[in-house]
Every structure is written in structure tokens, then in C-alpha cells.
Image 1: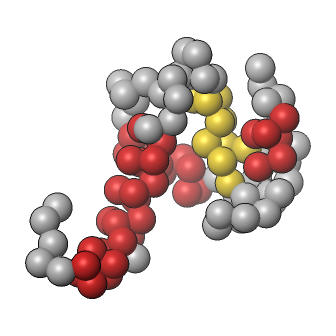
Image 2 (image 1 turned 90 degrees about the vertical axis):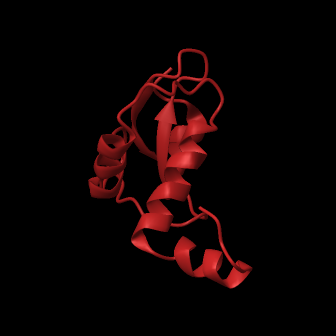
Length: 95
């Protein structure tokens, strides 16, 4: 999306469309991630998930915290395995 100035991009990044687009772009860049997913469907599942699929802790949005929401995936196959808290995702509990 071309922007006339950096402020336009900053404003767009804060919109619902911008947040969604940036999150999906980040997921697509993950190691081993398949590009063949229905990303809109995955995004809807992601935003509507409130508890870790493994330990059931309440999830929070953001970049920090042990219970921040993470899209878990297998690094070799690219298979998406669930929405986990940061702690469970780092443990790789679904190996």
C-alpha cells in the first residue's frame, strides 16, 4: 500500500485492517510456515481465542508477558498447532 508520508502509514497500522495485515505478514514470515493457509480464518480464530490451548491460562494481547498470545506452529512442517501462551509456546509443549 503506497503512502504519501510516514504519518499515513502509522495511522493505517493502528486501524483494524492494518493490525490484521501486519499480524498475518508476520505469521507468513515464521520459519517453516506454509503459505497455503486461509489466513483470514486463522486470524479470526486467533483474535477470538482467550485461553491457552494447552494450559488454559487467560491470554493477553501485546508483545510482553508470559501469557501473551502466540500462534504455535511446527518449524519443520509449518503446521499450525494452536494458540498458546508465550510460556507454553517457548516450552514447545506440542512437539
